[in-house]
Length: 219
Image 1: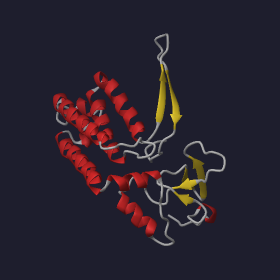
Image 2: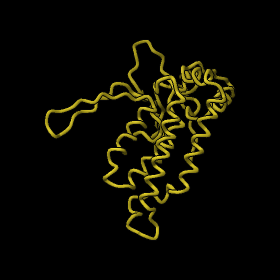
Image 3: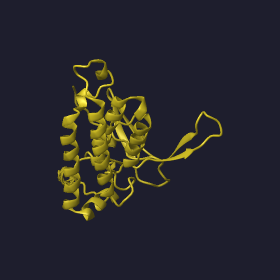
């Protein structure tokens, strides 16, 4: 491990936003700054100085450290208006999913686990858990009034990832449900797609109309 200093890509030169239009990555001693979405002429380039998926209080605490970087992005404003009770409501819903997942632990929802009867989970149990988790995801979604492009549904990501694992475990019969969960994952981060149908059996096209927040699991 080593340390590096890139003055032109520091806080002093790049403004913070919890919904940045650019992101930083590293390749050895090379810092790569690339856009996350289309940037209009004259628009300031922004990066995240803190982890946007962290709670509002943690983000503000991190930004308060010297030299101090206040955030006035739409995401912070939206969460502040919602209040602590609503944010706690989301935390409680995610905890309910974790409790339900104890009946079908994530580490046992491997696609090859069904080949080993001693380690497999009955499909009816996984199906029932998936049904309950899906309801909780709907409840989580209902706690938001702003679109995902303004207020990303970060608390929804872990439940959706678990739900996808359930559908993957259940096999081909749940392929459609799995695809829908993946679409919800992207929508929770503010991505918007347009779907077009085709005249033949090859299917239609999926066109990206708006980029969302590029969290680490999105390549």
